[in-house]
Amino acid sequence: MGDTHVGDTPARRHRSLPLALYLLSAVLVRSASGGASVGLVTLTVSRSGADGGATVGGVLAALLIVPNVAGPWMARWLQGAKDARLALASAFVAFGVALGGAALLYGRVALLLVALLITVGGVCGPLMTGGLSSRLALIVGEDDRMQRRAEGLDSATYGIGNIAGPAAVAALAAATSPATALVVLALAAVVGGLLLFLLPAALATPDRAGPAMAVRDALKGVVRRGALRRVMVATMLTSVSTGGVMVVAVVLGTQLRDSAGAGAALGAAYGVGNLAAALAVGVFPLRGEPERLTLRMIAVNAATIALCAVAPNYPLAVVTFALAGASSSVLFTATLAVRSQYSPPTARAQVFVIMAGFKMAMSAVGTALAGALSGISPRLVLALGALITSTAVGVALLDRRYVTTTAPETTEDPAVVRNP
Image (cartoon, rainbow, N blue to C red; front, side, top):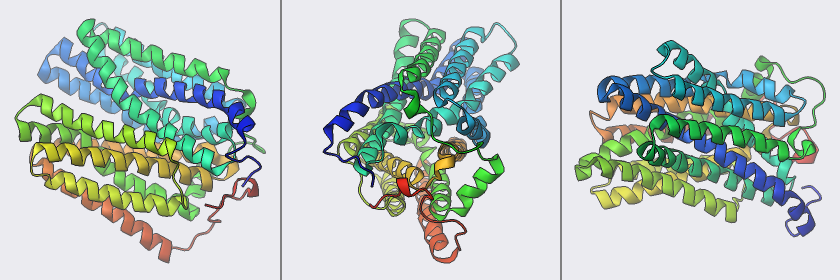
């Protein structure tokens, strides 16, 4: 590993403030993202009624997710930026302006214009996830343990955002209006973007020789590098299952307790488990080779989703959903370690954003499928999710055994090779 060690307290102190600023920015941005879909549905329902409003809100929420397929092109833009802070901040501010503008204009202008604004915000999505996470290794340095701890804390920002965002919408919509709630989320994204300028430029801008890779070359780089390819495919399949968990939680909880509040509480149990595990990994960093750890956690996630499917009563369902959230959080942290360890140094941001974008796109597919099938049987949806997730492990193991890799399994830069 590098020259920085866990016991090197001056180095740790030197990086603690940039890391704190990064985490604060991430919490604000991901809270805005996490609450946006809930806020849009709440807004449209409040203006147009439960039936038509829910349909319009669902379409607008989907427009926040579908543009994640633009991740490879957004990744190239970020990788080629002279100052990554400016690129990321621009995306976060654009998301905030688009979300706030859509909230203020809904019902006052043509719906198509509102949809266009939301789509612009959706295009920024990959930079709010993988793009921001790609900066982490540059901030905390090369020490493996510090990186794993930081990755756990980064994972926690997603959990906080997915709880704080919807909670803020619920509170502000009740106290003021759904439009005001969305504007507050928009301001959080803007502030989160501006905070990035407090990071030292040397830590926010990667060393790069020559221009950023073309999109096609970056995609080939991911596909040809065995660990990245296997983890990308496995997490894409897994996201079909995890993308629909919150929808299924609401339906199953309502069935078990005959109460809409019980369904929301079951979804909250998943979120609490997710956040608790992320914080635990931040305190006790993951150990071991990242790809193997990722595959093991996918198997664990499949098992917890299967337990959700067979939970006989509501209290056990709460426990199993919390366990599923926890396993999903640890899995995500492990995938960050894979991206960090196996990404070519000249394309780190592109790898992070590409993998995040494809994962989000598949998550949207999972949400749509869960919405379509949960009315038939939420337990069937969970069982199918467990099966798909188990299949992801099998596909990765077959790839590892039989597919010839055309690029090195480890990063090409000796300075960032780690010995787990």
